[in-house]
Length: 301
Image (tube, rainbow, N blue to C red; front, side, top):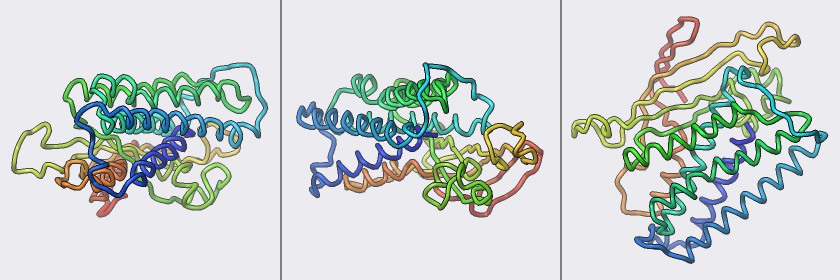
């Protein structure tokens, strides 16, 4: 889940950087042709942020654990794969951010995909290598598969449709499990938002009109398919310290809004919509779990 931390840090930092450089709406408009100063600023900013974040992780996250020879681990069965969903989400969103910033600089589409959309994959690979040299963790091939999947979802849609018809989104609700194990699942909302897998839901949000091509449906309306899990106090279902976990997979069907498809001439609003488009908009939601239970949420977030 460190990838999700890194994604949040980089996404907010770059977004804030772009917004704070100028109040002029025209400055925020993507360039029609290559703007070398913008491109250079994007490359320098992203490189500096990635370097600073990796350095910070090394000092704040890994410093408390001893180093080891490089090793790999198989953690594919942990947390009902919710941590893998976090890797897919992080890689997709970092790639989207990288491509969008290069688009703002007027970089041609091919290079946006080659250099921009691989930002997340490159960064998360570096984090994974650092895991490999830590006694506490290890290099996870399933994490890498998840990272590649997230990048592939973005790049594949751009190559196939030249747009993102299917978005990856996130939502969160607090649970009682963090109170039972705050050291692992978070102490307070800001930590639980990132660490409590029980409260997280990851969504594939598909734009209806992109597929049906009808004027009877608003262009911004999406159909969303979610995945979550519940009842987890530890990653391992066979952990002898937590034998009574009622671990449950949850599947969701809901509606959503693609904020990027809301018409506006304001480039400031476009950036704001782009930032918040990572969050699933609350709607009535149908839930089905792996134990056969069906539940209707009148308002699910």
